[in-house]
Length: 582
Image 1: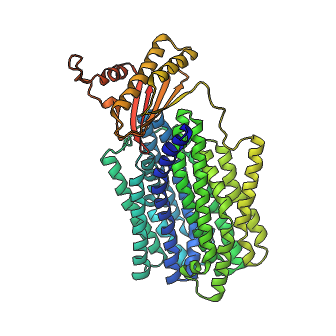
Image 2: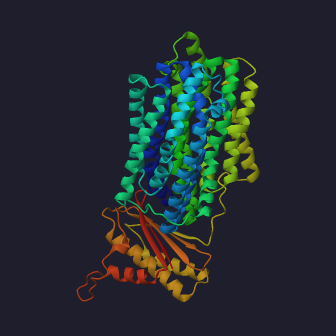
Image 3: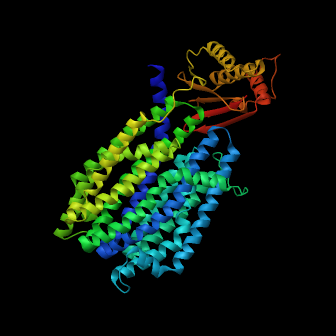
């Protein structure tokens, strides 16, 4: 097998699925929790309850914007900081994101409760005293009371996931959403608590999720710690700016839901709004799968950017697109095969309701293929911190084109409105193709930097001497001093040698070595291997005996520890990663 194929199978696919599969369970759990709200409320209360849920959706969109801007952007910067060996900086980012998220949530919730009647009027709840108003009031009040708990999940989930603990993050979220579904049934169906019961169950699940996430901190399973550093507005602003490229969709959804609720109330009445709520939740289910792709793509791309490893970035993007398109095909086939059963599950019963709902779902299914490409590329550009491209895609598909098509199609019958979805996604993909054609690139990566050295070592036949000679020549080309060149070559020789001699219990062991020059004149060595957990710097350097021939591997490691400006080890995505700066 060629070297590139081995690297792709080993480092890219294995890392990708280590993040993707747990994240898929978590993200699907979120969507299932939302579906449970609609299913139980629709079957117990009817279209008035589904309408209230649709009216209350903008409240969630507002807090999603705040929480996920900070959480997603902060976790990207956290992954980049750890990729460069800056553990303390990463923990400062987490602390500032968590504090800011909680403070903003509490302040906005307090204002919302004070001005609740005005909020309901703005959301389009209709006339006070009606059934829709009463359900909407109960729902929104419960949302505002529990938002500080529900939306503190974001920082814990995204940071724990990026801190090499995707399984715990997934367990926390799956448990949270399982409890949400179970208690949704208890509160709404058994105890008859109405639409507010669907919110109470979500709050209960969120509380449990946060408690489970704390295991990561208590057991110190990664680099993440709960600290209280001085507030750093700059790091918060950078996190929000990066994450806003994704969470801006929630602001756009805030406005589009408001507009569509009013358009559909005029075109199709309560039935139109109820069907819109069903389609919206089915869309959330599809989006959750693409979110899982992003949660695998983003930390990997951030890490490879720190290494300036463009080849692995491209391979990660290809893997993400393959998985995203596969998910799109499966979901589209399922929706096209049984749209009536989906509608029936949400509580639609009459022939008129089932006909309207099934037509909407069939048309929506047509948008899934272009939607998959659009969303994967959006998350990719965000991970590269190419915010303009991310903003462009989100603005087109979640606001500009969506509103344009919805206003156009709302002039006809109710069935025509649902073509908004496939037309929006197809038009967005067309704009992306034209934009990238003008840019002459889809990846937005610079030409491979010839100042970055890269080598791939196979344990069975690794020629470490040849690599040392290459590194020595590479350092000369950088005009490094003799001392720096010597220490860089020795670091490669000793660390790679220790890994090859001690870490691999199996024949097929691989080491990815990358050397990156820094602006301050130093060079950073990035090493990634597929051995079981092994940190060369944990070798006992106090029991070295030349006479007895023991601990000889540790001699060079001891020297590197004393001479290196920085060194940082962590277990990440199933691999050992080591950063050494000389």
